[in-house]
Length: 309
Image (cartoon, rainbow, N blue to C red; front, side, top):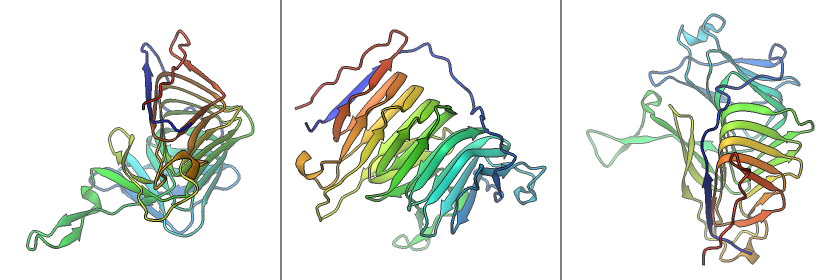
């Protein structure tokens, strides 16, 4: 059944992790020296390809070990992939030195296997493009000029149909974070994936989203539009053995160019595993399938789904 939904439940009095607790040693992981942050405290980094070694991927934000920083650590690190290969990460994703918000953006897709997190304030995995911003020319208002990167107050991304982020774990060791954002047309949390994060935002949708520099939170914007019909749309999937635990968990999924559910059979939010949260929000207009469990608040309150005509 096709649903239009906005189901929210919230309770309070919940304590959580401040920053990520590493369960994997970062010393053997691939290390990348990031560029110096600009006046807005963002380190902008572009890569033709970006993947880890067999142990993981660490971004060096240590002013005593990375001379490229110029003595100033970044508060946000953007790792943008400009080539045609997907990003594959095995093991830990981490930051060396001062903790920061980390963003990995690759329109070709991102896969993270048997992961853990180390020293990350917030982690954003975006299967899309980093969008450059423009400003009006003061001498010619009809002309647009590239906005200097140092003046960016937020980062904007565009995700296209078919893009995917996959997080896969064979063992149930938790990925522990303060905040995690995942933005892709399709999001798959597979096998024994176990994410423990105070704030979790999963945007399974094609379109635009913006990321605040200070809070490290991703907010969805305009949705994808097209003149041709697609048989598959956005999809969020939590596997049977998967588990999400957090203070605030948002699942958001939106249809595009589909007039009814029969034209988009795979456009859905599919929860087969376990979600435990104090504040849970389900938003969008996709199909909603629940064969797993939702445990909400200290009293294990059950989410009641309501169909909106």
